[in-house]
Length: 75
Image 1 (cartoon, rainbow, N blue to C red):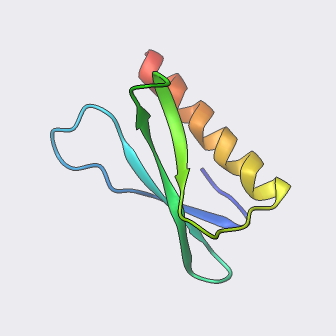
Image 2 (tube, rainbow, N blue to C red; image 1 turned 90 degrees about the vertical axis):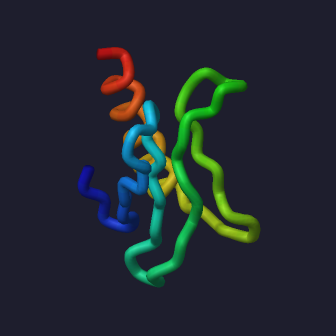
């Protein structure tokens, strides 16, 4: 997925069933957190690093990426 503000990097170890995606801020080259499967929620969720701030646009991009992952999982 292409985002104006964020980079998404697939960090999934070989053999793992669900993906782990690192989320980085493009402008500040800053690690924001990761998207990974949450067994408690039974869906992908964003796990942010402490003391990070997110604009509406960044959160919308993260939501779109999670929707893509959930769509892949349902196939």
